[in-house]
Amino acid sequence: MKLHFIAIGGSAMHSLALALHQKGNTITGSDDAIYEPSKSALEIEGLLPDSFGWFPEKITKELDAVVLGMHAKNDNPEIKKAKELGLKIYSYPEYLFEISKEKTRVVIGGSHGKTTITAMIIHVMHYHGKEIDYMLGAPVRGIENTIHLSDDTDFMLIEGDEYPASAIDLRPKFHLYQPNIALLSGIAWDHINVFPTLENYVEQFEVFINSIVKGGILVYNEEDKTLKQLVENTENQIRKHPYFTPEYHVEEGDTILETSEGDMPLEIFGKHNMNNLAGAKWICQHMGIDEDDFYEAIMEFEGASRRLEKIYESDAGVVFKDFAHSPSKVKASTNAVKEQYPDKKLIACLELHTFSSLSSAFIQQYENALNEADETIVFYSPEAIAQKQMNPISAEEIRTAFNEPNLEVVSETAVLQDLLESKDLNDAVLLLMSSGTFGNLKLENVIALF
Image (cartoon, rainbow, N blue to C red; front, side):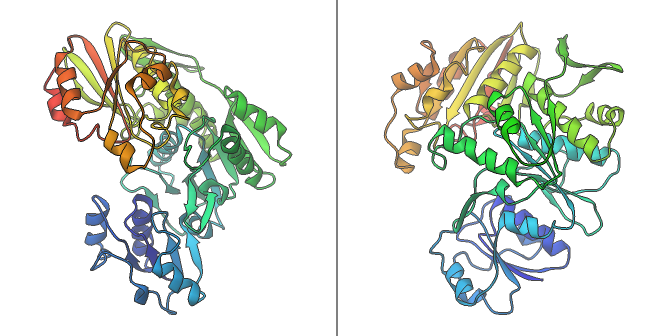
């Protein structure tokens, strides 16, 4: 196949381009900017465009198809040329479906935990030498590539998110996969810029449930009342397998899972991760891994990158870096760290970085999200608000939304560094939560405080 990638530099797009190139396809691509690590990865394989920008002359009748990334806008000149020539244009998720039509598609969805659950399943499969095709939404420790494609595997495991497929197809990605086996971890309103109301957001999961092939399987978190109601009300003829958080306890800083075969120590921790583990176990069983083999493998799972990632530990204290940014994730991570370190002072530091988190219409969703922390800090950048062309938000509005009268609100990186330096960090856990960088806060300077 001769394929051209419009917006080849995206995290998922460049990974798919590389995977298809390694299978012997002829790949070209364009983008107006490409950053690391995508840039080096494409360059090594000879797929980095000679010049950045959009070049309609790259779109010719010799192409079998065009794959379109979300970064490309609707008026992109390469898209226009492809339409003029009558070429087949696939969005990223459409092409994933196209190449997995003959496989059993396993799709992991939900507002939270998707990457971790998908990574758990891949880890277990690799541990037992079972090859599967897969697509991960983000890099994960111990898994070399975020996409793996082959011709002779039975399963295609896909992390399915609810963000739009492309500029010319605004359907959520996970609507396009038509899974044979699916998992939903829960529903917590997010992406207010795409889904302006909770009802609109929940509707996307209803559509997803109805997209599962007839006779297929849905594994779902029955502790989520909204999700449970959707599953119970669907008329789609599917098998429904609920799961719930298993029994576990924390013993001298170790999380111990209580199983029928006895207590089992884990590398991961937190109630949300125990819930993720329960869902992953069900999926692995449907993919041919029995319960005992799952437990044997999962004992060695160290977690997904940037998800409660321990970046420093000493007798003085501990520092975690976490990707948490939505209200449900922030609360889950804060609660998990406090449960794991009940005798240490927990300092939770959150950056409001996404469109949703900086919106006055949404920020109330963070109420009580940081309550388990002993000290709380929220950082936000007025420049980021201006760049997103949003209305300003005040420190008092943030304190009120979080229901934290003692919340320390900071809007300059240097002030945040000074504030952390003023803290008593002896026997403390510092939890840094953000999908950004705290305005380029240098982590080595933070670690040096301990």
